[in-house]
Length: 512
Image (cartoon, rainbow, N blue to C red; front, side, top):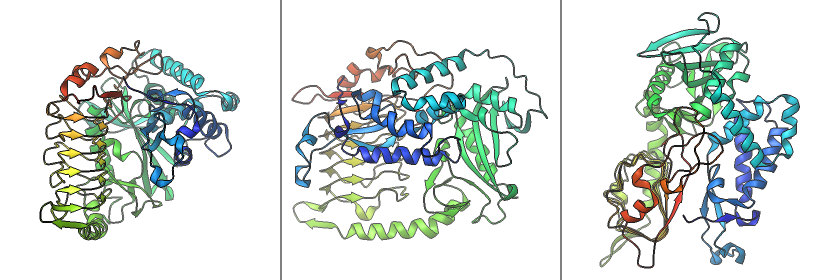
């Protein structure tokens, strides 16, 4: 397994950006969780102790359990100093396993005020071990039949097949929810008029999804701010559809949706956990900011028509001006083709060219395929965060990295034949590596991202030969499927002439 280490802060070229993102995380969660004020114990631990660990001598797989890092590409033409040419220099790529950080915050808030003040100087390794012990204690609690009383501890909202949606109403109900789900709802105040906690229970009364609703204007306006599964992760795959159905019905309640374009119920957090799409510029709810929508809803259709389509047309028009024509070469773009965050369902036909002589950026659209893509990309391909089901019709040659993580690929049919950099296929529901047999990857192959189980269990000992990313900390994270064993990955791809490709296993994630 190929890996690298981060030895000191200078080895993260943009450590200041990493710290800024952590501060933003704390600021965002301050709406939902207590004790996150600047200068407080939790804030200081994240911005000092955690940053010290992230920028210290930590193995890359441990670091990437929390934040995303990419090997740095040295650019002397931009005046970068010589130390950035070292093999162990990395870039923070502005993505991270925030659910785990969210879970650490919950652990801190489970402590007494006195104990919480002691965390400031605790190193990350100690806190990580304490969180693991906390998880173990939650897992070992006796799973007895639900003793909560309807009408006193909870109110039944409605049943959906074998499941029941309930609104929690007592301190005991909040405590049971927090212990069963492994998050901090047990510390919430059930008497607060500002928050409502809704839970999905199975026939045994055990919870699987927790939804937090924030109330405004005496309840006349409401926002869903959290949609969580176990340990602050996204709901397990089997519960996503039923959670999405509940949220859709909640949003479309005619009492709150008299004017569809001006709803009094909106989703501002965790919508991506159940397949909603996010939009950052809409003026809704308590003000402008990120909101989540179902792509087939009337509200999204209105926003798409008024705001998204004009943006798409302008950007397509601008990119068309960059297309060059050469009689012997065909159409090409002498530079980057940036179509990120355009909410495109397909790559525009008007921008179909033979080659892009820079990067191709397709991140965070609604693409299901790479149809109409260029045949050759001389830079990197960024196509993560879509719903891509097939690579057929996409680039055949990628000189740089090929990043197609967190899509809906079940196989690799249609993948580029030549990849000069790294290949990122983590976070796809792969069933096989079919299609890789004619592909040469000169860099590393990044795999991982299989779902976290909807249960608490002690982790087994590490089993690298099976691709298990696990150790003594936390809960089990699912072994890699058999076809993703390191030897089988290497055998699946065409071997590069100069030797074996590198492999990097990333930690499992809660969602694809």
